[in-house]
Image 1: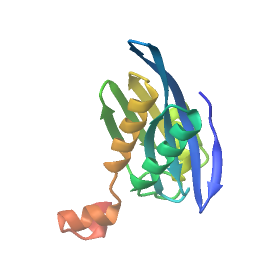
Image 2: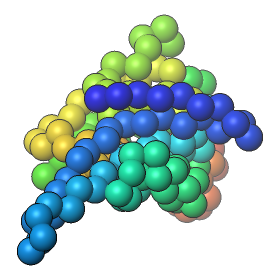
Image 3: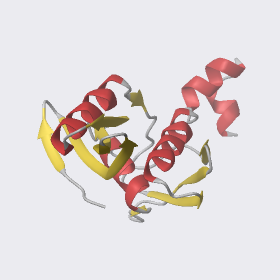
Length: 166
């Protein structure tokens, strides 16, 4: 799986996967490309996009544009996530667990690219089921969307922060 880094406007772009697809038509085969791209600012914002085009460069550009439009904010506590999270998309499942400082990013290629562009430095992950890059990327984003920081939890439950920390 090729990876690419490009820093502009404070965002880092990572090419997760490129896939060549073909459609058989009356006159032969029409070739096209899919590109899955992760974009993040390394301080808690990350997005994933899928671009499709007849040329690889156009597919990457479209994927980057979609990723920028679909960015989410991830709560980060220190250099890790606040609690365990599970994500699912189609046949892909992912488990994200907070880790002690100095652990690093323990993840495969797709999940690693998303975590690094989000700015998460210490995390344990496990991909279960299908490892198709597109579905695994969506499952990771679903898991990150489910994360809540302590202030949002206390506000939702209408209790003081001290009571939640126990």
